[in-house]
Length: 109
Length: 117
Image (cartoon, rainbow over all chains, first blue to last red; front, side, top):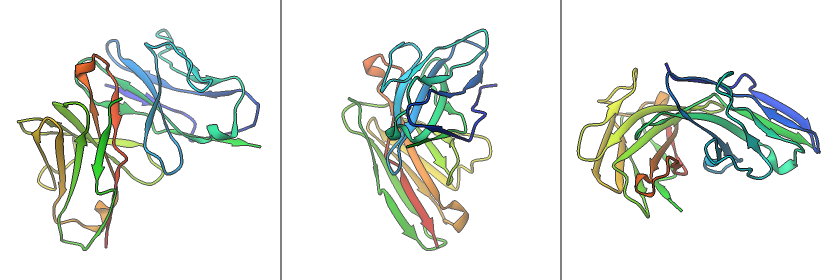
């Protein structure tokens, strides 16, 4: 069964502190992993995807197949990073995204 | 980039009436679109997969007669909430992928907030 687990509902950090949003998944195959972000009163938007191996807004995420994890990290949190973050998985073909329950990141000044 | 438009963004209706929500891919064709539902402070739950020219595929627990999906063209899918009740009040979001670009990324609409009185 496909499943995405985000264990933290809420994560509060101080500005300038490192951030790690956890994501674990289960999937029988080779999925593609994504992080989506939803800022207040805005639509869901793609933050990054594992195959791109890029850094967006200072965030990075590495797919660890052994641990079936795709944790999102940023070395120095900014206030504008405060948002809902969703980890998502997509299988092969034209299949839907399966979302985790989301983690609300709150960056405190 | 790929843009998905939803209309209306906000609708209030009386209990027992039907509401139609449109999802359009503005600059690409989408043979498949996905409809999600998001309750307050919760994650997105997949409701159904909308297939152009054929019947939608519904997730377990989603009533197909309640949530009618029509995907009549490659750029438009509609979700009709029939005989709406207050428990249908939610945020409905559609998404589509521009498979023609070769990318495996889904783009989301801004969502439609339905309030049933």
